[in-house]
Length: 284
Image (cartoon, rainbow, N blue to C red):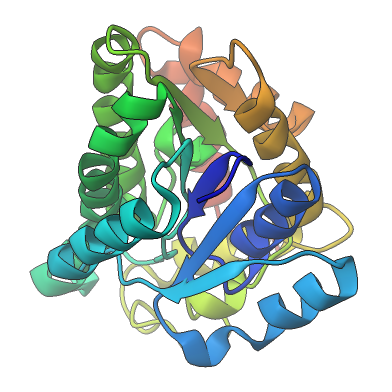
């Protein structure tokens, strides 16, 4: 048992999840840091040691419903409470529907959407008891559909719809819900989605558009342009600690400007004008 607020975070082996686990522990949370593969826990353990904080590091595959239920049971037994959940686990994916299988699309939905639903569902009994909160890392890709991100954006749109719908229901039971929308963040995203490999769409009618998109994406995720995981983590921890957190928050001014184009674009023309430029081949 603990008097510190207990926080469960998914997807903490790197990036935003790792940075938030450390930042939240520094702010006094008792952090349960989970990841699908504990063989990747070395960086988190080193970061915790360097920061002088203690973490409860556990294996959790958010697509395994039995494992999710078992971890929430363990939390109840070990801590007697859960004050906050941060849904962070997810995976990027680049592709277009003609060039990928339905199994690939379903796999993207399984991790990025159904994983959020599964952990949220399992955590709600404890969060109702503590009158706690649910914070979920979405993306500006959950607001604006982006070329060659059909499956990924569909999953993030689903997350946004799920949580926007849940928010007033959960609030009636004392549970606060916040959606966090980062833009480009300087993590391992590019490597993890395989942009450095030869995409399947090369050698197809999609090649020119894809090359233009990849060039734009590489520039956006360049460390000099992208937001750092640590600055995203600071936003998340502020939300976790806030007495009245917002229902939705962007993590940078760039993310706010990008999301705003959708919110004022009733017929979709502005969004299409912006994203079409992303896939226009460069002039010779």
